[in-house]
Each structure stands twice: as structure tokens, then as C-alpha cells.
Length: 421
Ligand code: GDP
Ligand code: IMO
Ligand code: MG
Image (cartoon, rainbow, N blue to C red; front, side, top):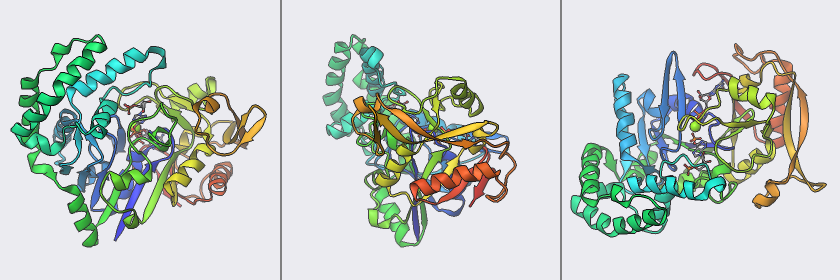
């Protein structure tokens, strides 16, 4: 029996999709437990590229994909994703929690309206309605997937919620007539009918599967720095992206999670606003962006790039209890003369070793770097031993600093470009 979780340790886009696809070879279930279609997980197999926003990455290998209670589900996106996959000849095996909250059109409108209202202070959200949907969940006025299956329940809830949303849209100066109760009931009942066969009490199903000795992989979305409690608040997403979120988001007890794998990109990226201590606004930053193809899977926005920040990853390891690390995109650093790793922050002449909670501190720190020699190429490397010496030094330094073993090294987007240490 094994339950494993894969968690992003930085600001998302660490390459979780690739790692999950690789690891899902040996599992029965792959589970998304938080976030929604703000996520964009890319998997490259041969000359095919798959981009998932809601589907768990394991569905490509024919594993059972579970969208658990902690996810906020946009049914339109989900159905579209299933259709696209079917066109590629893959019929995903799916289970969707009846407890998961549904992203409604007014959530997406409000996400955009709030961002516009914030102007220069905007979060830089994906505008997928994530924040407004989670807000409704916590305020106990959310629509759950189970509600889509019963037209009268849906009507009752929408007749209560929609007037509030219309007023809110009016406050933001938006056309409230874009939201109509009857239209929503029709469309969302229709979505309910389309997904009815997949809707289950996924918590019961997963716990039963664990008892039967099945293997389960929990697929995190976003990263620790975007966690609503532990990230660079308020420049975060609206869910718990840390390993603890895997329990609340799936109904699997913390006692049952055997292994937590932290995905660490060999450098740092971030999309949207908020502090990024190691950001490089120079030629090297541009080089990483171009070579790493650092453009958002969901929004196409350019990702900000910088050196690897181990203060961030150490903090992620502590909060998530990371057992093993998967380093991704090491190949993107190929060919650089020197590479740097941030090991601390300088704040008004004082050295800070732990990630600060105060965003005003974060905005005024300078990274303290350790410098390494670069290396030529990792492209065709198949084992740790074959890596260039300075790349090995880079990896060993990360392991020593974090006191967590590196188990996987990814040197290319394709499945086979993965080194198991
Ligand atoms: P996720 O959100 O964490 O799943 O990551 P994304 O899919 O948003 O972004 C990672 C990007 O890097 C994708 O385009 C992957 O195909 C690609 N990728 C993953 N691992 C590697 C790697 O080791 N090297 C390179 N060059 N690209 C990679
Ligand atoms: P994956 O799973 C990178 C960022 C947005 C924004 C902030 C809040 O692909 O790693 P939201 O729409 O969630 O309210 O936006 O979070 N963000 C991500 N950044 N990868 C993601 O997902 C992200 N999901 C959200 O850019 O800064
Ligand atoms: Mg992504």
C-alpha cells in the first residue's frame, strides 16, 4: 500500500505534470485535491503534448483520475478537456467528488472585476474564477458538484445567490444582466447530466481503495509560495497548496500518506504579481525565460525568472514534510558560465535564513548567493554519474542544504528525459 503526494515547492509550474506522469506508471489512482483550472500541467510524450487544467495527469496512462472535494471545478473546462483527450484516442477514467465546489460564470466575471478594480495592485490571477469560488465555499454559499445533479436544488441555491452576485457586479460597474438564473439552471443542469456518471463520494472510494492495497498518487497544483496561508499573501492563490491540503482536499488521513515528493525547478519562476527575491531582470533572466519556454500554460503570460532560491525550498520542505526531491529543468541551465543559488536574504544588513511572513520585509531583501561553475550539457545524460561534475556539485549542494535526498532529475520535457538517482 502506498499513498504518495507530489507538491510544487516554489511558485507553481515546477514541472509537476511531468513528474506525476512519470510516477503514475506504477499507481492505480491519480488525484487532484485543490486548485482548479488555474493550473496548467504539461506532459510531453513523443511528439504529443498534453495540457491539463483539471484532469489529473495520470489519465494519459489509463489510470483512474480523481477530482476530489478540494478542487473547484469549472464543468465547461472539464468537459472540454475530456473531449480533447477523446479526440487523441484516450478515454479518461474519471471520478469527480460530489463535494467539490463548482466555478460559476459569476465567479469568473468577479475575478476579472476585482482585478480591474485593484489596478496596479492586482494579484495577476488567471481570471478563472478561483478566488471568488473558494470565497463562496468558505462563506457556505457555494454550488457543489452534487447540486448540479438535481435541478430543484440548483434552482433553490441560484435564486438565493444570483441577486447577491448581481449587486456585486453592479458595485464593480459591470453589466449585471450578463447573469441570468434561468440560463444558469439550464446550462449547469446540462453539465450535471454530462458528468453524472463520474460523480461519486470520492473520499469513500479512495479510502476503500487504500484498504484494498491500491496505489494512490496525489497531484498538487500551484506551489507552496502560492498557498493562501503560507505563500506570499496576498499574492497567492486561494487554496492550501501544501501537503496538508492533500488531506483536507481528498479526505485521506495524514497518517495514510507514506511519501511526499517536492518538485523543485532548477531555477525560479513566477507568473503574476508579488515578490520574487531572486528575480533577474537582465539577460540571464531573459535567457532562462526563452530557453525554459517560460510562458504560462493557462494564460500564456511570460513567467518572471530568477536563480534557485533555497530559502523558499527549505521553507517548503519544512511545511510539507518533503521526503524526496525531484529537480526539473536542469537542462535549462546548460551552457551558462556561472550559476547561482540563493542561501539567505540580507535585510538592512541583517542576514535572514528563514522565509519571512511579512511581505514588506520580502519586498526589501537582497538575496545572498552561492556561486557555482556552469556546465556544458545534460541533454543526453541517463544517470547521475554521467552528469557533468559541476552539475553534480549543484545537485549535491541542494541536497546538503535541504537535508533531503534528490531522487529524480529531469533534463528535458519528455518522459524518458528523467534520471532516477
Ligand atoms: P506544472 O504546472 O508544475 O505541471 O508545470 P508546467 O507544465 O506549467 O510547466 C513546466 C514546463 O516545463 C512544461 O512545458 C514542461 O513540458 C516543461 N518541462 C518539464 N520538465 C522539464 C525539463 O526537465 N526540462 C525542460 N526543458 N522542460 C521541462
Ligand atoms: P500550476 O498548477 C503558476 C498564480 C497566478 C496568480 C496567483 C493567483 O500550473 O503550477 P488564481 O487564478 O489562482 O487566483 O491566481 O496564482 N497561479 C499560478 N502560477 N502555476 C499555477 O498552477 C498557478 N495557478 C495560479 O498567476 O499570481
Ligand atoms: Mg503549470
